[in-house]
Amino acid sequence: MSHATNPAKRLNKEKFAAPIALDNNVWVDAGVIILAGVSIGENSVAAAGAFVTKSVMPNTVVAGNPAREIRKL
Image 1 (cartoon, one colour):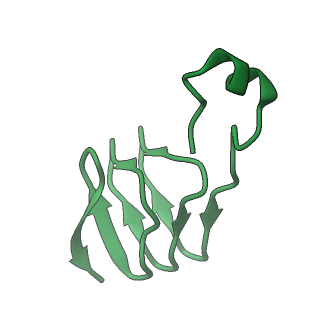
Image 2 (tube, rainbow, N blue to C red; image 1 turned 90 degrees about the horizontal axis):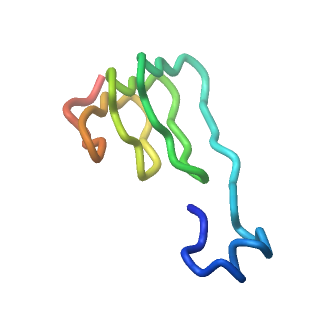
């Protein structure tokens, strides 16, 4: 989720933010950005500078902008 572009909707603040979920043994490297509502599965890695826009499956390494799976662990 993100902020609305319409000022009236932005002032309402509905769906302005959502929690993120990090399962056990997750490594989030330096400079990673995780969007609201995303979850990162167990034993996964978000490489340095990754822009995580979608949930990450367990045992996965993601990298890039937007973050994409680069391998399974």
